Length: 79
Image (cartoon, rainbow, N blue to C red; front, side, top):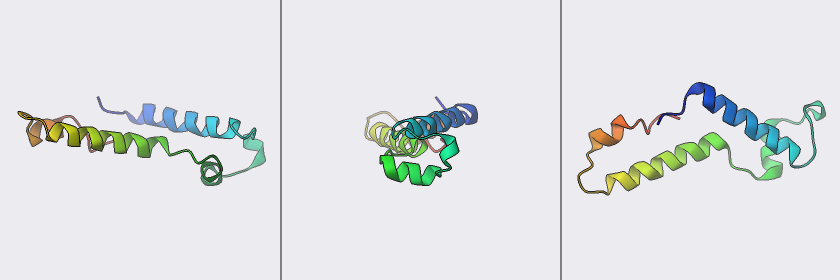
């Protein structure tokens, strides 16, 4: 299943909201997303999705009977 642009945007927005709630900050505090991510130490959700897709593709590549064409059809290269 491919992650659509709409669902990727929702994931990123939700993650930023959660990262602001963790230390008790709001948007009015004018702290950038980059600084928030450094403070909380949380991995970016889209980086995690990409890593997970690549790991799963590697798992499939080691299976018997699964061809590279099959893996490419599963859309592992897009977020």
